[in-house]
Image (cartoon, rainbow, N blue to C red; front, side):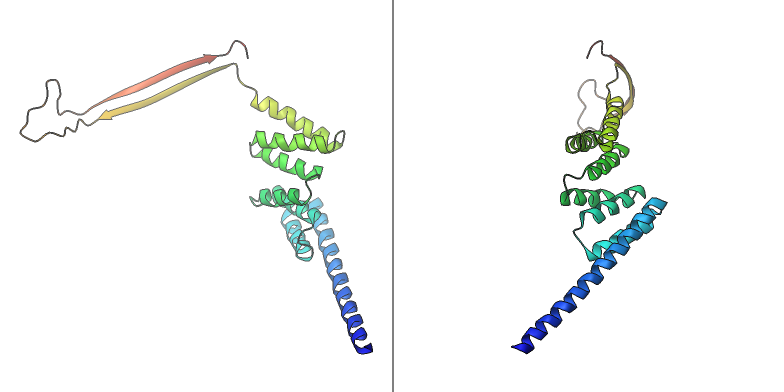
Length: 195
């Protein structure tokens, strides 16, 4: 009985030592990642946050900052990582802000607007919501419909006049075996008096 209690105690101590070492490795990698992010070393920051995530795979904060580092370095994987960070912590205003800015910069204004509106709902009156309101104003300016428009279309049509007739059969009246073509030019003007 004493031997089994001692074995359990040794196992618990070994496990807690491993857990403490794991926590220390996470903290170091996360801190180095934040320092690299602040210095503008986005590649180094991404590496450190990935190291931190090996210790705590479902950590929402490390996932978010990895997404931010990837986004700043224009890595296409940033969308996937930021969406994963949002799934881990949906009420995080910074995650919504980053996804909104990423979509805004990529020209996906409808989706960016959704993230900004969500942020304003989550954190009204915060500095993040003020920034989100500014982005929403810029989205409105970019997507505002124009009152007028001018369009031109040009093209060419070609007809080879391939006739599916036997060689000896006469062609119908007015049909020749000659090919022909024509050019087309179309211009239009749109104006909206009132929307």
